[in-house]
Amino acid sequence: MKKITLLAATLVAITFASCKKDRVCTCTDVDGDTVETTYFDSRKKDARALCTAGNKQEKYTVSGISVTDDRVTCELD
Image 1 (cartoon, rainbow, N blue to C red):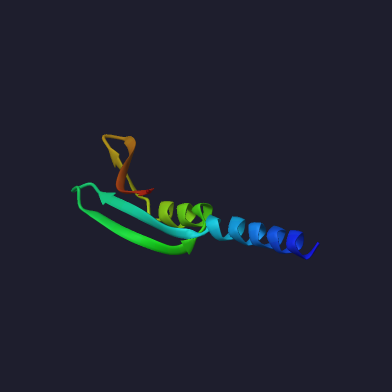
Image 2: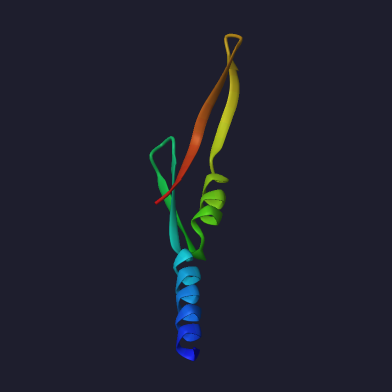
């Protein structure tokens, strides 16, 4: 019985540990310059939220037409 409990506890620990790992976010601006940010020991969902928060858009009007221009685009690798 102790072996089964120990095995089950080990499997649960491995499952939770595998969710967290280092994730890299790459941001590119309109000039083509890139910046990489590493999020250490993070879940994919949390890292994606932080990464996409870096996306920036610029809104302006040209000849009475509203235009949205992506200035920085970030993606999680």
